[in-house]
Image (cartoon, rainbow, N blue to C red; front, side, top):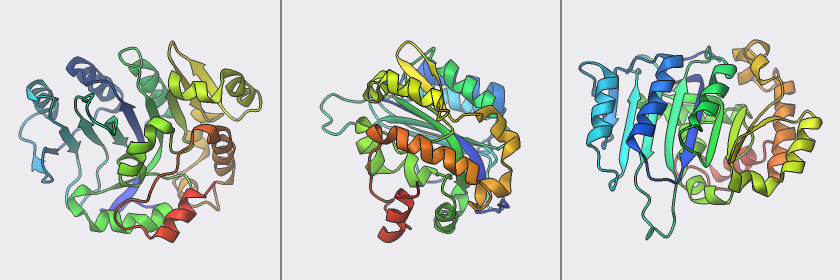
Length: 295
């Protein structure tokens, strides 16, 4: 798949958590991300739909916003290096606030990173693993995503839909990670398989440790157990960088081996998979049903 100004292939990581956001932990996560991706953002969005140019250093602006924000109110914040003529190489999105006890339907806090494919899965794995030293996240998922250009919304998102439908393993921010139906259902389970996933104790206990160990022996997954979480990943994850090029990731005719890994992991994860509704825009119901049954 060739990138264009509307959409293109990227890798992504999404973090979900139900604890109130701690400013020092958020800053630490961003600092760690900067260390291995070294992004350079040119515009940002804060509490508005409008993107604004960054005058100065983005990291200083980020720290200033986090320091000043009162998390009793929702913080919607994003940084990107896209413009009207070029798709972003890197972006980060935040939807975080204090989760009040009186909320009847508690949706999680979200931090979403999107970056170029040349960042290795090994680096991504260690970034996720290290993040749990500061906070036990409820669910973390990393894999291939279809990035869309916010400067060209809604056309960019609309055009991306057909590409998502053609590939079984691509995901996107609007498709799942910020899908309101998925967020409401996350407490009951997760969306599906991905390259690397971290599950809190509440989630992986539903699978059972013996079942996880058996799946490892069957070469369905590898795993690392933490104090109150587990990280699972597809076998040979660290070799995927060399094994699957852009064309293979995009076109299911060329990535049969990877699709098979996803299918096996999807079957294993069935006890904690949840159904959720299609995005509010751009998808027809019959298209959504086909996509949900892709594995």
